[in-house]
Image 1 (tube, rainbow over the protein chains, first blue to last red):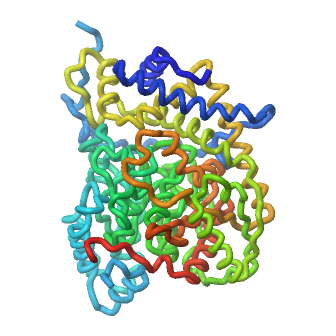
Image 2 (image 1 turned 180 degrees about the vertical axis):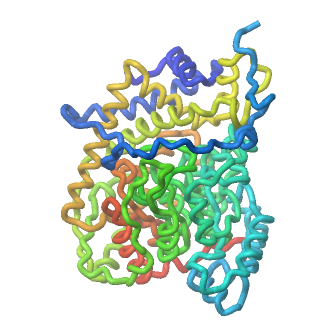
Image 3 (image 1 turned 90 degrees about the vertical axis):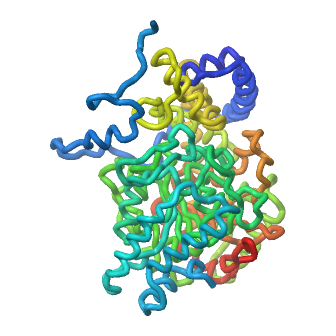
Length: 97
Length: 486
């Protein structure tokens, strides 16, 4: 499974929302291929019946009162927005012309 | 000795006696930065005007109302948000980003009276081991300007080593505090996972990230951790465990301390000079009345692969938020929304970040999830069990922080796997979630080496006690790099 083809890399880039050139696809296919080959050394280990660890501490849900709190001020929210109008964030047209 | 080479105790003593004022300390900080940062390149943004204003106000506060870190300067890694002060994660995608709130740790250091000097360079989104993946600049190792300071908290470690600031905050996902601390000859602590709130630290790998202090000595490090540690309602993974007064427990007495030395940490791939410095350190510990025994952490060799799957998977999810809509860089000349996302991310992220996003996306995608992500989570369990087992019989685990001293700029940048191997001794600690410190333990041809002391969950106290005893018995931490003859 280790070797990643250029087509696979392009598909992953699409899933990750990254535009990718032919040269990049070539380079990443080689580098990611080497990395995946390396990480497959984990297959040497038998992990049947081993519980997966997502967090190292026994984490439980943290509850709080369901009380309404003031949100961020609009002015602050829009501080880093490239384009906005009437308190709304502007984006390019979603449908192609 | 300049003001900034003094410990917090010595600085407070001078302030209390009226030898100098807080504003003098802050002025000297910026003067030093002006003198040496052209060479070291540790800072991305400075907070000079506000810092000097704060210093003047703080000078008015009566001495008996001041805590041990009151009025002292601190630098902050650029992936920790600071209200009103540009925060970029050393990435183009966040160029010009002005946070609208302070991270919890920033709030806490402010409450302790510390003064934020500026933001420190790092590997882009903390992905790297040399600070070379920063979009903005390459930080140099103050001990040898042709070498890397380590990473990803390279700016934090270099600024402390260069005497620009006596305190810095870093973050550590796979070694990003300890490895640069080792390369720069300073003290860096990665606390237990959950010990310090991550609220306001830009997430890389949420199950591994921790914020921690970088300082010139162990005592100051302990003081700073006391300030930033504790449960936080804004971080549901922060732990509700009491925070001890670490610094007050440091007395140099470690008689009877049970030290474990994993044979895997001194095996092949570790430089002879590094090995020797650790063996010498173990003799120091024995001399102080500790017992030293060899143990095994059999799954150590799988930690690196496990880490790269888990950290990249979490990163691919965390970094999905950078889409060019609400903040940061936005690509121009795009034809639709999908194109906006793709172009913004392609132009905004550097190669290492893209590599990891893609590796993570691949690991999590249909058909590979079980073979990669789930498998890695299972191996993480085995690695954690290795540590649990050793800690049944020992108080701390000791070994080197890095396999070699600092390498040259450009040496490993085109070879991801070799670069990743740098973190082979620090990564398992993040996977197990335990605390670990790196302290200076020797030199290799004039380059500092680091000793790693690893503790049980939430037992930073014993780690600090061991580190302090070693530091007091040696003088590695008293040496400073010479920069421009100063």
